Length: 109
Image (tube, rainbow, N blue to C red):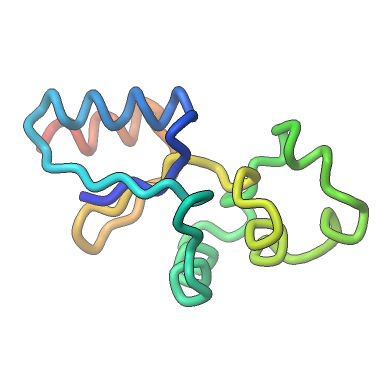
């Protein structure tokens, strides 16, 4: 299982810990230290669309007007911290966030 997120993100840390407690083997990828490739980003945009950008974050609000009006790919490429997280890859399935639905799905396995 692969988690895309930030080492400093408390939600990413909770997800990682909960999955490890369940015995899941986790690979964590900090998207600031190791940014997404164009192909990886395109795949996530195809799956989640504009939901991949966290428009409630301070980092999003700090974007200039040109970037705010750009596509999600440009926003995330310019400032990876605006990506909603965590993004969890479990084999061929992708999940966005760590809400009750994602937790029930991944922790029930």
